Image (cartoon, rainbow, N blue to C red; front, top):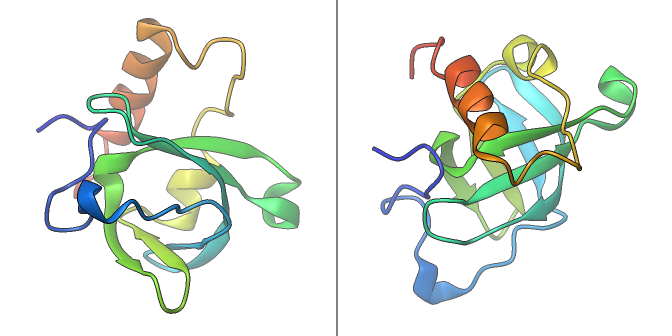
Length: 114
């Protein structure tokens, strides 16, 4: 399974749902909001602004980690804890398109059970 693509049981590309602005829920509570979402096959991800929770840090989360989307409540649920997301590498706006950066993130997030 490609970590950089949405799970078909969670996101239907045909619905054209824009996740920007949705609240993000980790397995143990709210962690921030979606600053940006991409929908490219094999390159899909969320940029999550954690706000004051961890001093405004932004993190990039591969789309495969989304476990559920609630359009009515405007919430996205991810299969990681607050601590796992807090400890993730900070979003690097200059490097996020590079394969090496994505590989580092894939390696980091894959250390945790799904």
